[in-house]
Image (cartoon, rainbow, N blue to C red):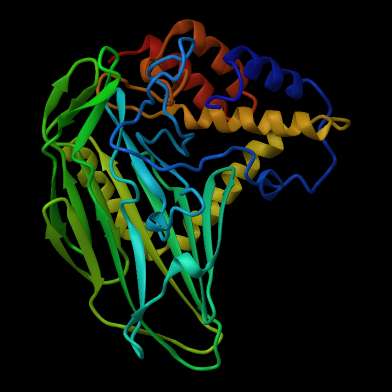
Length: 395
């Protein structure tokens, strides 16, 4: 269920594609590969599922994830019918230097209130659709008088960007208020094989208000086989709109300062950044970038499309290739990009881990890295080079 190909098959498949003639079919855009991976699930306060039978390996994440640009945090899509998660991307999960933990079931959920009636729009009654295309997550909710669309991409190796589009389907002005909320998972489950149950570790992380958003301050924990965290690590949400944030224990709510009127048949577009940083220097660097990201959000979506379409154009090249092999090749690209980690701590160059989903594979090994480079060079030459540098250059 988790990783769809072995590293050897990924390398062979992409190398084979690169030696053939280029595909003349101009319709192989990334929309053609919608939902080739199932990323739906409900994140819990444990990340790795308990073994169901003797052949199961303890340490596998029970949900496939979406990660890009070497980020150290990733997202899922909600399961259909899990209405409490509607309105936000599931998770995120974050790598505590090596081991994964879920921050929440859905940490940044939007809520829309009709100011004329003072009633909240109930997304459980909407026609909901959750899609994954290479490089982007999309949620769409269709209601009687409005449509809500959420799109998530990565814009740096520390920051994801959410685009929110609310469309007024009526012939009258739509006066709405918005808020975003979430609850922090503040403990981590570890499977106790003897007792056949999860034991929970208290993490003692905290929430604090920030300008137009909220920050998770992580508390140092050095649990060698389960969780490694420093006091400087943060997860921060920032909105392009002005909001006021209220915090109560492990929950927060960021409310729009002023209501918004959307004219008939018009739309509201707003942006939100979600950043996971390990050090103060990283946080300061992202703070400077976020100002431009929130101001020029659409530019980053254009760049995302260009980059991912480029990956596909360089991967799907065999003129007579059967469609099922096209899909396998694009799945291979997605797997390699998901496992891409950017420089952090002792890691000085971008590299690719064997699997972000398996607890013991969040590291670099020569055997895997050589094969990953063979595959990756076909669509991202610089990442392939850095994958080797990460092993050899440690200063």
